[in-house]
Picture 1 (cartoon, helix red, strand yellow):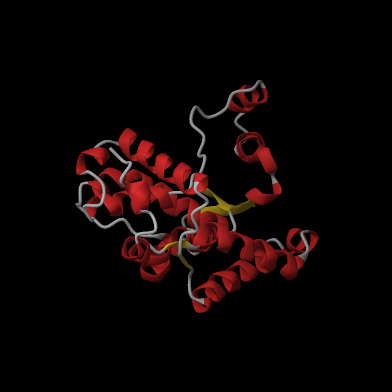
Picture 2 (picture 1 turned 90 degrees about the vertical axis):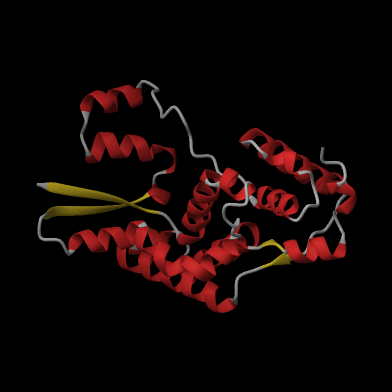
Length: 233
């Protein structure tokens, strides 16, 4: 018998997180010119329908349709705070040894801490355009160092960079799916959080912070960062 546990995470949190995981894995490939480093904007427009198939709700619904699956449990990670791991092993799997270890302080050796990959994408685009030396971005540690340098310099000089955001049509598709997910699977929690108005506010905040990207072509064409790029060795 197979029991499936799937985790719900709001799309406006999950999509940027998964995007970050993917591009971070391939950053050296992008830097070497083997593939183009996509922005999350490109990614949403070109691959949203494909990647949504891996979202927790979609997976839960798919597994429910299989006769060999005994049960499917969709858990809401937003309703658990820091107790997600404990809830999973103690309450759902009822794995006593692991549960006790977690209660004693054991945690995964590596945490999934998200970072902003826009300066990484910008640095690699600058290298491929011949704006910064190719030798400056050959290894992961160099990519990280140069990305951090660009970010720090932009902040220090208070440089305002042009940005691009997803189309309203794309955003409405994502928001509509979030509303459907929570009304269908977590109605009481959804209501307790402030319902549609609260979700919309959270969504709009996430769009500005996580979905809008730097307009790399415009940055290069205007030369707004040329003095910063010249400092990269």
